[in-house]
Figure 1 (cartoon, helix red, strand yellow):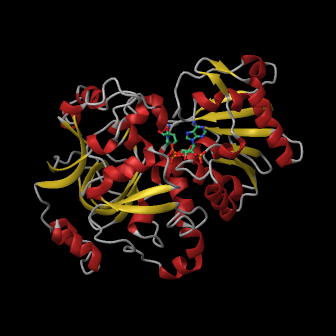
Figure 2 (figure 1 turned 60 degrees about the vertical axis):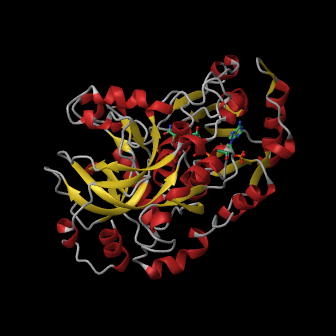
Figure 3 (figure 1 turned 180 degrees about the horizontal axis):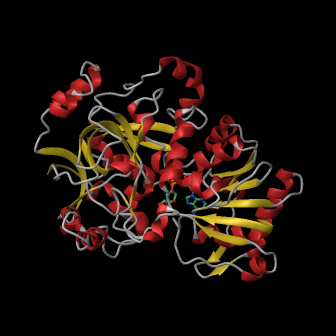
Length: 445
Ligand code: NAP
């Protein structure tokens, strides 16, 4: 791997050189092990420690198939799906790999006793399989995490609707938290030239998801002037949703849980902020009973901030804990758009508020190819910025995942894979200089 790393870091290799550079038979990767998938049985999710389940192993290089590419991964990032995989919640990901493996002979490669995880990557193309024309060895890329087969007509209007849709590095093997990753070539997008490897790897999954969920017509179709309630406004998803709201002329109402996070919202340009911890909302009186008075208290606070207006769109992902409140505070005809259920997926809300007020709940999941491309294009043009707060070496990815599980992080947490240090990979120094305050807003937060 040293030759490949040195060639990328020094910039001395011509693009064609990568095609002839030998690729080692094995590489370092962050894994979970199938024989450990019951290790946390009976424990509460919050007590499960990702550091116990995540390993850095040497794994065998997978064979390259048609339409695929092998990339040298310079950096990756921790996503919440890294947390889910590492605590085997809500299900073990080995079930995904087994099911995928049964679909065809090439997919069988993914069904292994270990799972190389990770759904983001920045790096350099090393090899492309038969039928790949758009990319070649030496190209500097980021990878989005939509893996689809596209053999069914059902996925051709919106690739997220493909019956064989999977999230790479979560529902497939050979993900990005590794020195080498195997992707379908149509996951590749050009690496934003003004960003370091770790900054470029940070937005992928969450930025594309926030784009579809909030901006795209497949999601909430946000428009200028919309009031958008954003839960976890400085978290992985929320830190991009907040930027999209501000960029798109909407008015974000940012919900966070500390004054530091409120400051980050202000730094992004948001003015209306609710500290949910300081307010002490208790939407559930006990495990089974919600408290509509608390929904009303949140609604009143929103009206105080907005000058009496209710929210047009709620950007939902906490799930069970907040969903009843989210449905309540949405204005007549408004939209609750949801992509997750971090606090529990059996939601409960008062349906009278939904139907009598003609509100809509819109389910959203990652992004189709076009949406992922649009989201990356906005990063490349410096209109949306990475929200990278800290970076760990691959060896310490377990600790990085632990911090996200404990909600002790801001924005995105990066991981250096082949990159020997932070700060490498910038190709457009002029653009970077111009955008530096925005790019580094979350750094060290
Ligand atoms: P994250 O970085 O942990 O951010 C989530 C934020 O939500 C937290 O920082 C926290 O902010 C807030 N939050 C957490 N629990 C809450 C609760 N009970 N009530 C209110 N706020 C709460 O995670 P993320 O990357 O944004 O992902 C969030 C969820 O979306 C995860 O479940 C993830 O798996 C899912 N997701 C789904 C997709 C998809 O394609 N479907 C894509 C990305 C992520 P404060 O403490 O500041 O309030």
